[in-house]
Length: 471
Ligand code: ADP
Ligand code: MG
Ligand code: ZN
Image (cartoon, rainbow, N blue to C red):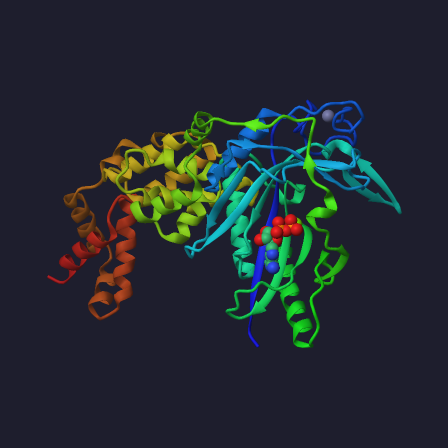
């Protein structure tokens, strides 16, 4: 039998607010253990949480960027469970009335992965395992998170990857999270099931917890898919459970049988008031959103005529895309700039992190100046590329590297004179060419080009040369 894969993702996005969600402790990665804590985030009895307004603001930003409706009233609930990473024995989260609902992320294929809701919650502390002992670092306790929950709309590991990459990109564009997987600022619970091809009844799912690598997530999905199919084909039944992925063996193991919402005894947190928003507030945030990568991608391809492959590279990091947008101001042909960025500039940046940061010495207006010289025909591409390399090394403007005469271009008369001289000085090459050796002409062409210091147009010169030789 053939099967459909069904995947739903619950993604935790750690927000990059300065302080935690319910207290004034710093929200910082990599501090000495247990230095960013206070009685509130340590859950001491008698302390009262106070919701960080910035977290609400970020949640609304995220919701709007993910095409969600924002609820005018939302509430905080307690999710009860006992574990050493949770000193209060409950996590403050949103269950009954989350802040955003009904959004989607559109994949390149045009398929929309629906988002059921987004809710705000606090992160738990971090357990550190060392030499057989377990330590608790409470710095992470109370760090603000958004959880973005999809409908079970994802039907392959590739779609899951693309969804997550797009989510990551959007969160970075709107500035709410750096989404660094290696620092755990984005993590995913992956729900997987299979069903007979075309059936509309969902199969029983398993949930792989805490995936913090896109590659492993994709492998885990493929592994689970095969495992489910094998069990079903052998007449067995899938047990709904929570799993852990083991990268060393590319397999999964059981953590616990799946808990249900009722196991958590969710109830309204009596310490916190309702979050009441106005339409004006939401509109204000909507107006402050930057152009998103999906919109930019479409603009680059449809309006600017940039290839899809290049557009992907340009929008991937906001810094790159912002730079591009500012460097193309007033240009008719923006492809020159796009080629400079993807070619020469990217070549000078080694790692993805460097590309993301996009700290280069040359300012966008300097690239703009260079592109304008090309566009107006004052400077040819050869010289421009050479100048660009020097500009990138020094941060100096193009005028430092091209002379007045470079920019004047070269007249046909001048080229003709150079060609005549070259023909006179290279009798042998001329003879060779006349006897059928095409290559000989290239040598002549090369020497004339050199004389023009790159200003000449190779095609035009070749034409002139032929005209002189073959009278
Ligand atoms: P819970 O809160 O118990 O984890 P939810 O109903 O909130 O359950 O679903 C959590 C995630 O699991 C969602 O992303 C949802 O799309 C996904 N999901 C639900 N049922 C299935 C299924 N049968 N197969 C795959 N994913 C599923
Ligand atoms: Mg879940
Ligand atoms: Zn605190």
